[in-house]
Image (cartoon, rainbow, N blue to C red):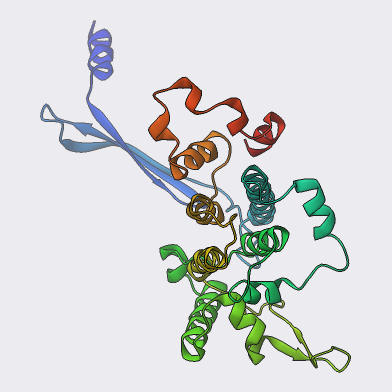
Length: 294
């Protein structure tokens, strides 16, 4: 009888469990509570020790290589999908026909895109030139600073320093856009004897060198400036609708249906949803393209 009463008492005992989880151990303790649910004594405690999941010599996580590879795959996939969405937008708005545009895009006689980014401020671009410029900006969309990146040292610190220096260079020389700065400023030129103008544009970063990195905010501003300039020169394809939507694509990470939702928000279609005929199936991209976004 006494053993049965003790078992029933243990079954209804109030207790709490505390855990201290580390990379190489887990400590635990069981505390008994009184009727006010306050701890009054330790019932049991202990620790389990195991090998840390890291490289002994360097301290790097064993999963770091897999994580880095997964991050790279995700970045490449998002970039590819972002460019596909932008090309679909251009075709939908009548700016290009994707097949002929891509044939031109991969031809050896393609005009220098930085020259076009500058000329877009000075003259009317053709539809395919305008699409080439916008697609290039979307492809190289710059660095967006975040709180986490700002607190980290190392590579992110170098990137932030480079973006700030390039921002100051734009202000000091009065460049209107990043494209104009890269096209005109000698900082982005490399001497070349066989080049027609004696130099080559070298806007890309080299290994462990982030000096040519630009803030994404400056590139988004360049998109707006280009659209404003093209409208002034009479480019009918530089619509405010596309200009409102394109910057959100530059910053987009989302895929699938959330992209479609953002699209119709930006082109103000949701204000017409009270009628079923307001948005037809022709407003959506081809179904296989939607599947690749998800």
